[in-house]
Length: 479
Image (cartoon, rainbow, N blue to C red; front, side):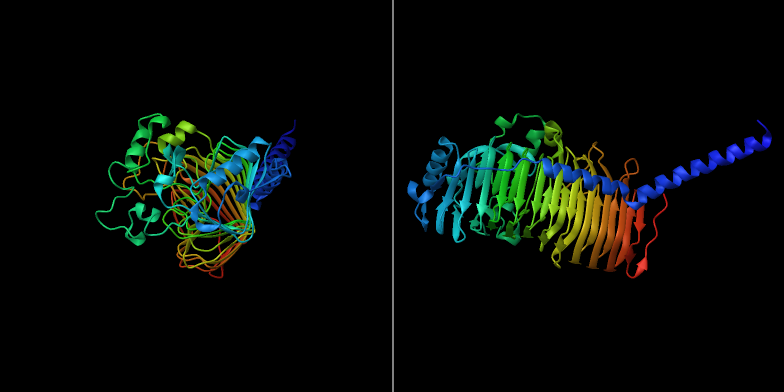
């Protein structure tokens, strides 16, 4: 080979190498990977099994229910559900009227259906709630039954346009949070007392079996509202939910669940709207959340308990929802030790001076966890108080929250986002030197007003594509 031919060959090889590199970079910035992810999640949605019930109706009034808002109807609900299940399932009908009850436990193949003017009023007397295998703030235990509960069931639903009323307020369940904002005063017992919540966390850290973590009376740990535990193929559709004791919709270790058209209005402590935990293939769509805590908070267990279970939450889809008040619109964490991946959020409206962040990831070195593959597009955001995107590895709300479990946060993509008032920051992110937050992309994002474009600490690969903040086009940040 002549020298000139060799030089030409080297130029060609160099040109091809640069072309490949530019193509790869362009692919990363252009959002092609996000497009592939959105395409794949469509297949997940199409493959999800749907609930289906026999055309049989069991009216709770036929089993002794009284719609006066005063008579305790726990036994009537139980009889109707058992009769329905014994005959292969169907619809357990709650007619128009007010029905006072203790907890409702569903069986497989049951659709609990509320007529439009039906209201279920749940007892606020803890003695009405038996102890069951449940969870509190990401730690499993034996505690008060959730208000509606299903364990190891398949093909279950809660439907209809009636109301589920937990009747929680500052004189009953909420006061247990130990906050003066919810009626607590010094000398009143609460979950914060030394023998309560922290004992549970310590048990989990020491590996005490769940069956031996028995709480309930005298421990002041509030029950979840609707909890589907270890279930498959579930639906919650159209109901209105108000005044919850604690977390509101809590699918835990539950796969293939759809939450559709639900309206949540509940401003109590820890009143997250929907908390999928250790759950996969979850669709939350057409819902309205107006809450005292996060509107949607995706979980996967707290600290040692999360690592024991080791089931990540994944394939979580949020579509066409409205977020009003809340600590965050769509949040991952802080109980996130088993990790979260493949979260898709699209076509949502978020707007309230009391909504603190639009998208939030919160963890720390006690929680750990791998959080990756967060895809957000087509949001209309009016006002948020703090920031549009917050991703932090230093979440700290219960005192010291540091340990040896360094988290991973990577691959966050926001596209086609319109924001009127972003609050303090467009992006607020912090990681560790040994584990920076990696790969944040804003594409076609417009934030009309915000105090600062971003605050970043130990963050790598932040890409801005056709993004304008405070009327200024933002350039990508070089590593």
